[in-house]
Image 1: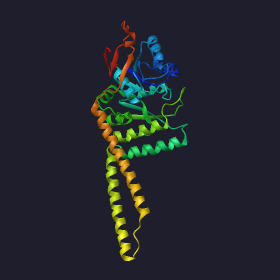
Image 2 (image 1 turned 30 degrees about the vertical axis):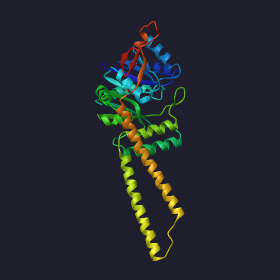
Image 3 (image 1 turned 120 degrees about the vertical axis):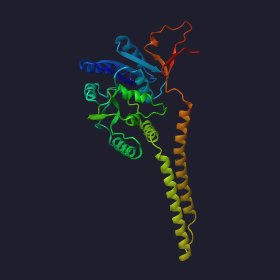
Image 4 (image 1 turned 90 degrees about the horizontal axis):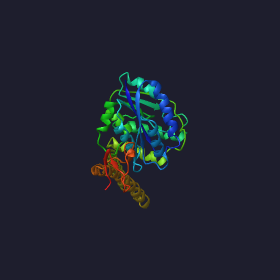
Length: 330
């Protein structure tokens, strides 16, 4: 019999977590699989952790990890995969935009030999501007990145144990899961489902956060922005050379005065902007190298369902778990 782990990152989801858990149990219990649910509280500021404690106390299939602060969804996904013990692992959000009712279908596709089963949402109900920007972004991704990312294919997927182990073997700190899923390969199948609105609460993915996430994706899997900077510099050099030859020819043949202030200012402003942009691209790569060189853990754990059951010592200190290892606080 298949044993399944469901990994669920949570950030300020106290309003919806109980409804999600009920829907998840209703979808999996008739499916004929044994399962566990691995919740990861990504440093929520509401009562999400309290709700996870209650779920773990009421249902032995529930396990949870709570971070000491918000480390981001990529770290939460990594922590959940490290927690998982199943032969298959499903990744999904707690806001019910990833319908739990699709999990039996994903399991059935996995039984046909697929290591990755991807639920690919359509864009029903999204605004026109966001849809247009998303399509432009995915076109850029397909053109410039070294891995293929499908529009609408997110974190909602089912992975075999060997696919999960492959993801866990990757040591990088700057993780972009959409790219990593594609990079590891294996047999993959996808199907589309209709986009669903959040059951409660507000989306944590505003315009600025989506922009930063998009930049991370473009820089994580290729060095083409650096190559583009070289090409741009060569193109500008050739353009400047042609422009200089044109000015000299006009001055020699027609006696035209050499253009002065306007041309100079335009050239300075244009070249300065390109230089700053190029330095920014280089700085992003240098910053990533610096971040990787420090080799800090991806996250720090404040509490798990195991540590919550440990009696606190008389001085009030509690155990601290960093990157999956438990040690006492100094």
